Image (cartoon, rainbow, N blue to C red; front, side, top):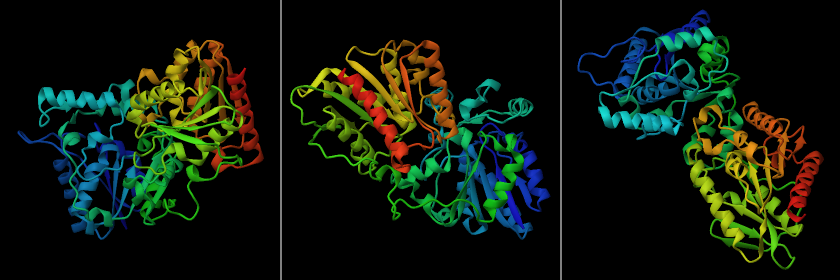
Length: 507
């Protein structure tokens, strides 16, 4: 028998598991839902301090109860914030736990508080303000209003009645649970685990694999063969939106099934390090600060195109993005056409880094325009993937020297699990002010649904405003098609978009 111990996330309690628990029980499993102190209708004892350690104790108590009374393999399931007390408890009872399931949650680390997993900067600031005003040991964060749940994760698929009930039963979150660092001895590392990713909330297996490929140290354990992954095509609350599918997935996870990631040092290079799909001659390269200039053979001040990598990219990734074959390939192609191709390193290391990444891009533009080998009045900016949001300020107020803006498979709005990135980064709003600026957008037909939605919303806004936009379609292309789909159709698309960008620069 499997005994599932289900731990809910912020503001919630055992009630969210009702339907999923019923299905697991019907499948023959023992199911326990953990009432965390101060949440789910469990009041705190007078004078008691509710923090992460007290929630860990709540989970430990249920583990011990199951271990005493039931000859079963214990599977701990943590949703959202719930993964923090789950990990703390598993670290203290590692010998009793068969598997941990991370249900659309972060990947907590020793010494890091749960607040670090909250992507929305404004929400983090609200927590810190309340802690400063009221004291972190007693302060609480009020639960969201009905229309604000999406700030904590996508509500895609949640029926209106379930959202009403979620709001009605929600309780304030004790700030100590968010501010107290998680303390782990390392024992939990011996416990196999599974990750369940809710794709409508913005993350999927391909994205996690890409992060592992980039060499981020904290994620390398995800490629352990004892670790498996599942995807659910729903929002952040699968126990409310897809209880049948969630129950089946939890049963599979308990059995050790699921997708296994490839390690970063696998024999085949990761997508971002695969050769560019065109064979292009190398150009002389000059490195200045955070840019590389790929110089054409033509004399005199030449137009320039600045190529911005996507992300987030871990700060320790090597080689850095300006040396990735795809970025270098486009820069070499530009140089072969008589244009200075510029690859740029910017500090988009996390979804909270857009402001400094945008500042890095602006600094790179000024650096390149001041170079005597560059025609400062003929510049193009080219954004890839996650850097698409940075295009907004250039669309909102295009300078006269900006001759073209291009974007390959861009993310044009924050994904649901990114929180509020800021009004500065809304290309769909900015395009109304782009005037006659030529915009060239490469759209891939096999884009992830969550990114594709942002692209279509941007294109809809562009059409409504009468923007000067050209769409280059790659119907059978995936995100990063230049690396993962080196087909004739992909090569044709690269030639087409390069002709368009070069045409606007040299006209």
